Amino acid sequence: MRSSRYVADVQRRRGRWAEALAIVEEMQQRLATQSDTEQLLAAARAGIYLDLGRPDLAHRHIEAFAVASQHSARQRHRAQVLRWGYGLATGAGIDTAAVVADALRSENLLQACELVLAAGQAREPELFSSQCAALIARCEPEGLRLGLAPLHALLARLAVREGDAQAAHASVALATQALLQGEIGAATPLAALWLAQALRSLGCAAEATLQARQAAAWLTDRARHAVPPEFRDSFLQRNPVHTALMSWAA
Image (cartoon, rainbow, N blue to C red; front, side, top):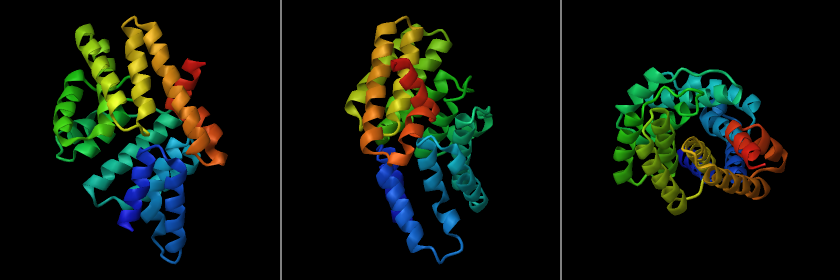
């Protein structure tokens, strides 16, 4: 059970949504006789549906997982990430400051990255560049490649907001390098969007548009080859990050 959920989550992180959903659905069929099937599979399915631009389908799975995770701090944080994702997808505000501050003190770096990347998507992120830089410094020795590109891009965006153009340019360079060297996955569009926003704020309009267009081309390819046909339109048009990139590129 646990290994199958892990495999599904890895496939989702790598941008292989059709494969991830197939693993979850096969697992659900195997466990159909168990009363707690919904809770066992809820987090994996909710994450996939949020990526695919279907918060309406994700909602009940998020709440089922939240109920099942009440007695585990680690799982409660995961439920929080999913709830923030739902709020972002439906245009609701999210209150992140206290949870992120707690996560940044945690030894669980992967969880801290997930919370910070979700919090960074708020209209006005309750984050400082120093917090993001400290998290990056902890992640780099651990080889968390999938998180480095969006973290560097978020740091660039935060540094621009704080008026530190030199730090922003340095983070833009690191984010660009991480995108070129890291494994392409579900975090790629988010990294590209933040990178494009930082570049635009730094007066680099052509470079910003190039980042958006490259990300939009990747999304279009993923929609064609790695997303179930019934979710292709929502993947491109209802996921807020994807929608922003597709609109920018157009």
